[in-house]
Amino acid sequence: MLVNGVQPSQLDVLQSHNHRIPFLRMRDAGLEMDMLEDLKSLQFEYGIQEEDRSWLYLLGRSHGLMIKACAHATFFCKLLRNLRESFSKKSSQEKKISEDIPDDDELKVGIIGGGHLGKQLAHTLLQLVPIPAESLRISTRRPEALGEFKKLGIQCFYRNSSLVQWANVIFLCCLPSQLPNICVEIQTSLEKACIVYSFVAAIPIPRLKHLLNHTNILRPQYQCVEDLDNIWGANKEITAALQDPVILQATCPYSPAGGIILNVKWLEGVFYAAINTCTRKDMSHSQVLQLLNELFVSVHFETCGKDGASCRKFQVQDFVSKAYAENLSQKRPFPWFDLTAVQLKETPFSQYLSNSTALQDHLTHLYCDSFGISLTKEQQPTEVSKGSLSQ
Image (cartoon, rainbow, N blue to C red; front, side, top):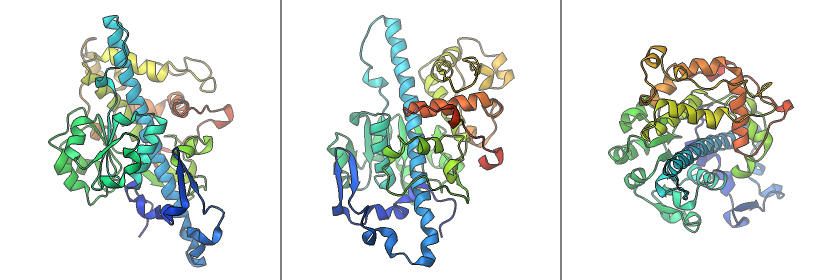
């Protein structure tokens, strides 16, 4: 039975209408055209009985979940890429040399699962981050079915443990029934700093932490409300949808538009994941704060607040307790944060983020700007009630 908790990892079933007659779908230079679009009698919806048409909203919901999942993964990878580029620039300045980014500082992304979600995610990351083909690899039980990615220069194979040894970020795009065996395969190969980003909503965070014996885990949680706005479409390509201002704004962390709400604990996890990434580079906490302020706060948007000082700079007590901050010397790094605990419990950043509407608005503008879309004054973020963002 389909319920509000439909998860992205099960979207193969709900999205199967997109593959109804493969030879009538044409792909050219990364663009897909549906030749059945104007042929009503051959479309998926035509054969559905009238009494069952009320369930068609599930197609829009599944597509909306897919769009949101890919959008948030893209934003996260953009952030990590920018962080790593900052590391390289800082290193070059210290050595007084000007070189291309070393290979070690390139963001390496692995995807476990080559189904519909895995493929859509790969296309989105390639085009919108953008991640170079040589920095993206896919592990799946059927690598022979990923010919389109192999032609782009992406390595596709079936070696999950090898993938996690290589990657900085691993996206789990498998079915819930497959996850326990995958965790057994990869847990001994996971580096402490490797971020596991799970789309398997049926496996809660504590269970995933136990299966992997790993704490550097992110898992977005989506809540579907009864009133689903028909903005997602059923056939629009993900990359094209994320260039649509209306759809992109609906994917914003604080936006309730579209009837699919993201639990903002994910956003907290993103910040702490960024801090862990910096800590792994042996950066002091003062250097980390400076970098976070450069990436998040220094960018000013005319429609975000009255002036550039509307969002204050991050301080150490925004991320750790006051008592811990008082004993933290300038050169000491931040502690290593358990991302699973961050997403399940209140943190110092929870309080700061929930109490600062200026920061919330600023992050919404920054999110849209990262996709190349600027919000106008008429497109200000809509506040979401805290009750709708529960675990």
